[in-house]
Image (cartoon, rainbow, N blue to C red; front, side, top):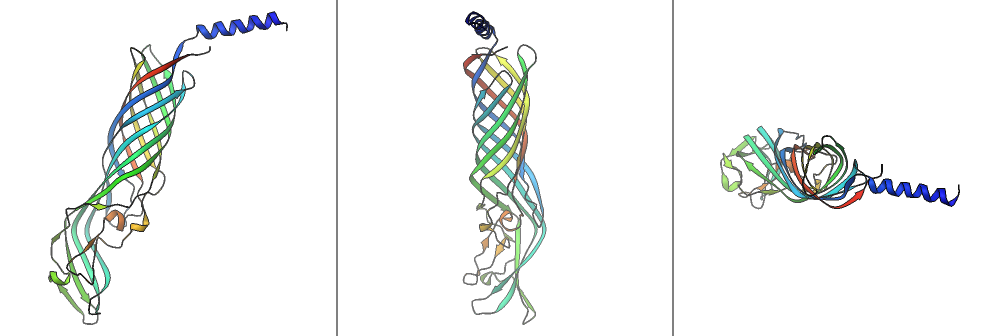
Length: 287
């Protein structure tokens, strides 16, 4: 093949490239989303429930061609879960300040705990989009998210009763607050810290894209996040919701049910998301 032929082929390729359809290479976005969320805690006692979820943040997508791209960003996500326990009855081996051993009995007829967790979430998603009508496209994204806990609190609701059973005497002592035995005492209104680690989540999203003027787009879709690892930090684990202190029996140590009775904590969320995007650079797509 001589130089003239090579030059002609090169010229054809260059002209074809120049005549091809434009597409955005760099896309920046602002997003907001919400739905239902919870934690797959599977408590040894009681049940876990879903509550609300909310997220907002900034995103960036790099498009390899008209269909394929990869996206990341930084988001703030808020998860809300709940654990409910009916007829709670537990005990703790305890010793009085004077050396008497006894069983510290804790009971609650209806206990509810709400968990509120805020995370800094960093996604890494592969995205495919298909152009439908002139101003309408469809997209699907699949990948992972890293969720770094910023704040993790729980708040208890309900009343509890404590008693002391002394086996050596076969006697149960109750309703003496100065010795740690109370009846229908309210759980504290103050929030309890949850010990959580960084979460790794599988993530999926799909929906539609409306092409707007001036290289802008509006995304609307459905998303789902599924926790892959256990966020619960076992170093904060405890045996009971209420613990006895031999040196200060009138004051209790309170622990969240998520710390005391949850087997694990894995975030789980599903909802809708809106994304407003704009492109900064345009390339020529080859035929």
